[in-house]
Amino acid sequence: MKYQRPKGTADILPEEAVAWSYIEDIAKKTFAKYRFEEIRTPMFENFEVFSRSAGDTSDIVTKEMYDFEDKGGRHITLRPEGTAGVVRAFVENKLYGPEQIKPVKLYYMGPMFRYERPQSGRLREFHQIGVEAFGSESPNLDVEVIAMGMHLLNRLGIKHLKLVINTLGDQETRSAYRKALIDYLEPHFEELSEDSKERLHRNPLRVLDSKDKNDQKLVADAPSILDYLTPESKTHFETVKTLLSDLDVHYEVDASMVRGLDYYNHTIFEIMANDKSLGEGDVTVCAGGRYNGLVEELGGPQTPGIGFGLGVERLLLLMQAQKVALPVQNALDVYVVGIGDQTKAETLKLVETVRQAGFSADQDYLNRKPKAQFKTANRLNAKIVITIGNDELEKQVVNLKVMATGEEQQVKLEDVYQNFPALFGEFLKR
Ligand code: ATP
Ligand code: MG
Image (cartoon, rainbow, N blue to C red; front, side, top):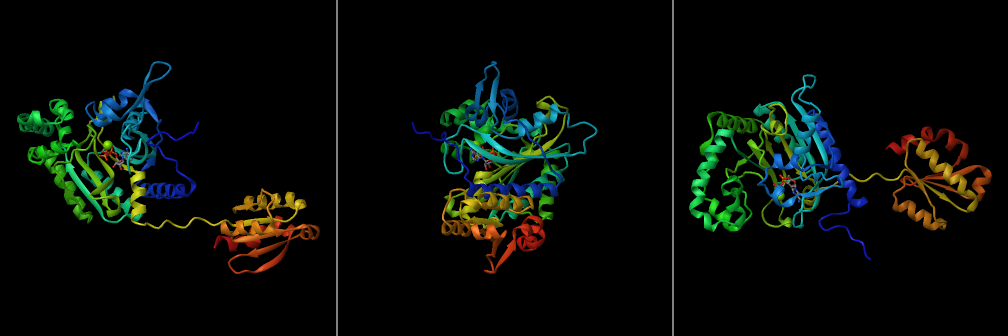
């Protein structure tokens, strides 16, 4: 039997993991500047957490969830996205309480699961880095969250970024627009895809988001939500646009953008990037919006919120396509070459000494000939090679070579053990 990873999953090998760590590190540093703090929530939640929040007509809930009954008969779902779990945790742990500094700003990173047709940039297990901010309706916060997403992608070196925004308005906007959309679509009912027929009366906004080509043609001439905004919704949206311009963040408005999750209202946005090698069209790497009703929906007090989710795999595809250079991987500080069986105990003591002194070190474990050991030292980019053979052992010295200059010297074993950081620390920090 040949074992293979499940369809739609990926192994992240050490070489790629370097890029993953780099992205996570830059994300953490960027979020810290905006006072976002990390939260870690479970990889699975009760089914209702997602059906209540993402909406039971969304693709995610109707088609893409990994859900099952556990041995205790509970309906469990592997998380398809991050927001619902964070909101559930926010409510359950009463992060809305008076001792919290508002807005409460949180970020997470980790795997998400969706049963989708796997293709480039679309997996069944994929990873998101996301942020959520709770407790303020200020358009400043909308703009801050968007700017932070752009800031992060810029810092990672992504080029040709495009920010697209829209508004879904408030409750009143939504119900007026809902009616207008149904009136417009009903005469075309028979032409709609099966999904859209099903959704027309339950959630007509979903039809705007349909991936069906014919549906897309039909909705091209649909009424625009921007014509149904209440004065408050309009003011909020206009303020967001003005503030973005004030920060020199360029944007486009796409009035037909609705996003795939039902919980959004007011500002929604997508950050896309374009690279020919990824095919025609734009790739959405980061997407999010406001969700002022979601905390209440999951049993908390009325609390506005806004956030985004960023797809790490898509980000990596873009970084590769745009040939973003990653900072070089750290070289190995010291490689210890041992010649002869008698040196085994000493080489182990040497590598451990170097490691305890705060540097990286490695040695041979396979009884290889000196030539092969030196070759490994080169492949590992060792900055210093320490060699010890039977003669050196007898004299209680080692041969130490600084690879950058080719300089060699004999050093007393005792000095290595007592004084390694003082003797070579400066050199290795360079
Ligand atoms: P799409 O329209 O491409 O299916 P979506 O609207 O379902 O995207 P969101 O739920 O908003 O996406 O998730 C935010 C981001 O997570 C996306 O912009 C994308 O970068 C990433 N993402 C979503 N689904 C997947 C997936 N199956 N595989 C890899 N990345 C994904
Ligand atoms: Mg999707």
